[in-house]
Length: 225
Image 1 (tube, rainbow, N blue to C red):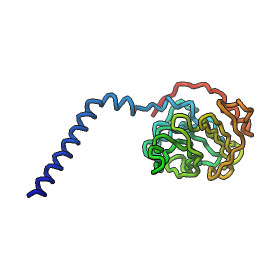
Image 2 (tube, one colour):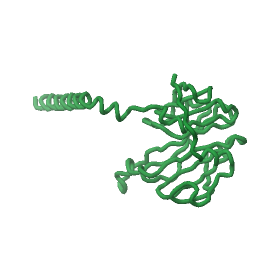
Image 3 (cartoon, rainbow, N blue to C red):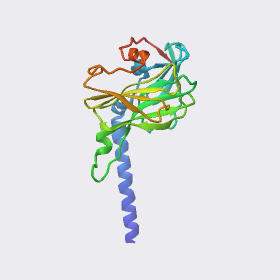
Image 4 (tube, one colour):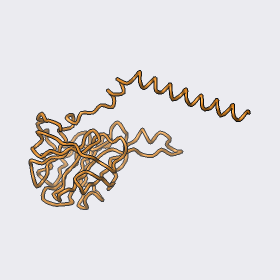
């Protein structure tokens, strides 16, 4: 009898908790939508051009890969599998090898007995690779972790003349690091380091087209399909 009473009491407590959460979610429905809403047009300035077709562009925003075949006038959303849960946005780059894409994003770190809050205090820039135009992704490389509020990619680029050549611009607090890879993102080497802002130490990527990409680009209105 005692066990039955305890079991019933426990079930009632669980039911009350679930109902309470439902009331809170319903009451904050508008606020929750506001927090979770995402418009891919807010990220169009990160779109990457195909080295083989300047009219073809790719974009990663709101958890999806977007593709445009008309220079960004219209975009079509595609499925993306293999990325961390709740991934929202990142920097995408297009290889000259057809179908090969690179994606730079921030991933969570792990907490431990010595750093119990590391999972939300720190983030780690990482590169993922796709060989089917962004439908599926696989992890390739991760950089040094840094504070969640002051760490991440400033850009990810490819060499239009060399397949497998990837270049990353990464900020970690006051440091701005220039990285290069000729292994399709499987390994990176830092080629230059400067502080505070891009160009402060005279660092440059060895490819003129990438340096041009670091300059502010005009943004045009676009449609979504």
